[in-house]
Length: 107
Image 1: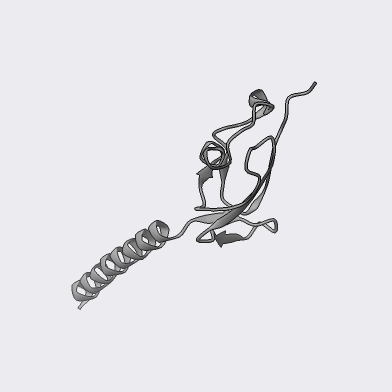
Image 2 (image 1 turned 90 degrees about the vertical axis):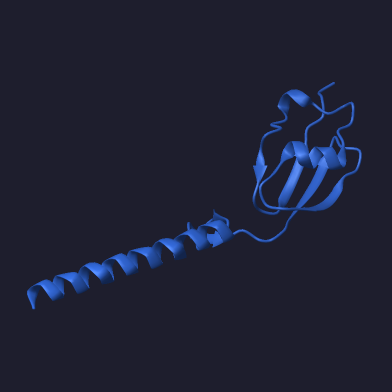
């Protein structure tokens, strides 16, 4: 009786562990998460909207996938000659909708 109970617990533990692993894997591969201002974790939206202004040829609001880099955004809006490239962080990544201001060179 004691061996049977141990075997049942071992089998149940393995099955529950495998189910948990599968659920965790499917959950983490299908959702992206960000921290909100209150510290709660929330899923990323399917699309984000970036309003680009400043030293760009085509300012305005654009739709992108979360995780887009500033370099990819600038490929859409194109920098002007007056853009201060030394102050731009090209590898900055965006996960939420926001306004992006591209600095101009000082006179």
